[in-house]
Length: 261
Image: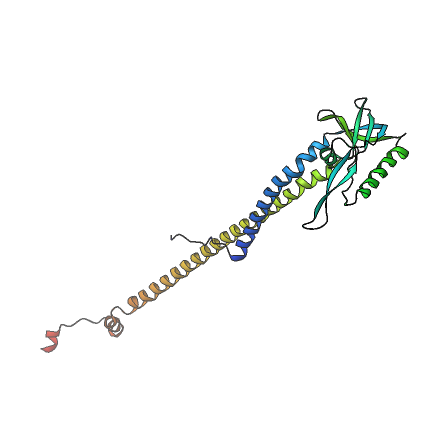
């Protein structure tokens, strides 16, 4: 029996689906690495800070001024000054005095001050922003306990007013790359499975057609042989058949010489 050949080539739509799936897989892997280095590592470090109860001990504003960089357009940059504000609190975790910072970013930007204002070109605006923060802690939070975040291993002398990253950042860093990766994998698998089923269906259809063709050819050959043998059996010797029909029952055959004499 001849081997049935089936085409395994993908159609244009299937080829585009596979390319789309591979593109989504590549995007998922790449975004997972990028977000892992840019956001996941700082988020995990931020989540290591434990919550604690803090109370304000003192609020100081030294005379030292610090520079900040402001932008006023695409090619416009400059520096301005802002006063330093230091807020010391009592940490319930270590039962010691620590310097309060707004978040991790400001702690890295200026570890000497508790608050870094949004940089403006006008120095007075920067000063007013720092004074509002000073008034808030002096008048409203001075006698109250509030929640702060403390990391004994990294910075035992500093506490944070709030975290820069929370669990939602961690969720987004893992969720969207995994969604892209799984969606691309699903598209590729469904396309390959659909093509495989189509190939099997085509092979079965060809086998069925070849079997029916062979059966029809066999029937035609048997009918042709039967039709050819029937005339041979009926018309093999027509003279004998006619003679047998015309001779009498008790007729004696006579030789040709006797008939001539």
